[in-house]
Length: 249
Image (cartoon, rainbow, N blue to C red; front, side, top):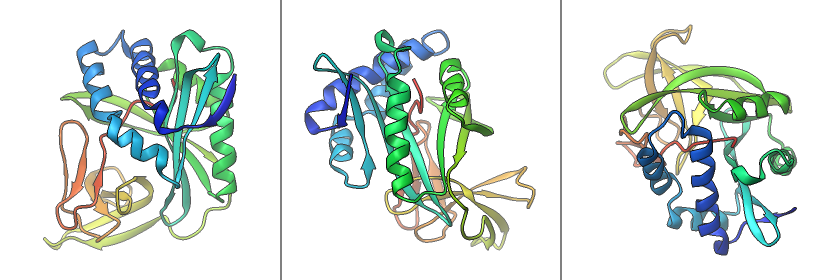
């Protein structure tokens, strides 16, 4: 098995690995038509082509006998601290259990540590038991669980974190919305946007009642989310791609 950086020529293989991995991990819980829709939405060929050319992305692929059998992608997100977000980590089901997932994760973690991140985050749907066990085995701690709406269905999603550096800056601040409401913004809970992160906002300081999101680009709270979990700030156009399954397997 060899690891190398992804190229534009790998896009079709990456899409194929993603689909087979999703079917293997979620075929028991999710309709296959929804999985096919997810691949088209989340692993769009054009977007993947942009991603592999992005200098800010860490995008290794695992190759066996000249064939791509696994891949991962991550980014450094500049919040009030530096966070490495693992967007994807997929291994073709025929090659699971051979150490490829761990090798990809080690490659990603090494690059993120070199980028001086404070912690690394990954998200896994609760139905993916193998993914959950993978991150626990690799030293990640469960940081929380939330519901995500995917194609009109609600799924439980778990967030895992590994602390790798000393946190800097503040973790929370209060903001006033245009309607005069006070919201409590958690800077350690965010999603990557095209221009800046989207931070989770709560009605209460104990973070029990969610308000929505604060756009890190313009600090507005008029953020729209559609049924495929795409997010866009109506004030400045900052947008987030649909949430994508899955950070492991």
